[in-house]
Length: 283
Image (cartoon, rainbow, N blue to C red):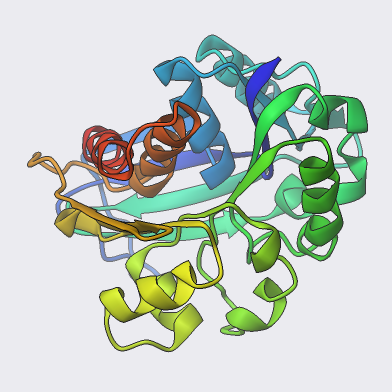
């Protein structure tokens, strides 16, 4: 029995790092470091959860190409069961170029296989083999999103709990499509900006209360300020661990891994939140 099944996008990350990065068309700039690494919100969360000790499986699509082989190989090295990941010869594996500084990042993405996954491809037997289902990048995955209500119902009918991370909405729609799934979610893990846009609230505290009225457990990621969470009548706040920031890529996804680990272990809310913050800070 898997502790965790992650369903979602798979892409390679090419991370370019420097103190400041300001590309200008027609000019070449030089950066201090570059790294090719497993990417995507869903993959980073799955790898983090596996490294923490959760028995983690992944379902998603790659191309039948070198980037796809790289992703499956690296995920397996980190302990993720990729036996059900599909290498589709009709697709090219997605790629994100991340321009990363100590303060922030900008990302440029070739969608490729990222946008090819549909919810009806998730096998029932795989759902039945897990305790918990996590989906990320809700707004990014155009073809997966319409089928999520049915996927979440299928999961819940088999006794799984469900968590969801939103990601940025490039179309600026926010709550309209989320309304179809929010009541099927047990754990929601937006960041501060997403929570404020989603609820129309002026403060994190107000956004947290509005979301907690709909979702049993909510954790809002606050970057260097840590995180705040609500579960039933319980409220908690945790600070980020002080760290020299080299790259913010994947910090929120690593938080998700830690927080969901604590959730699945039945930890008190504050303890799960502290682990999430630790994972995010140290990622």
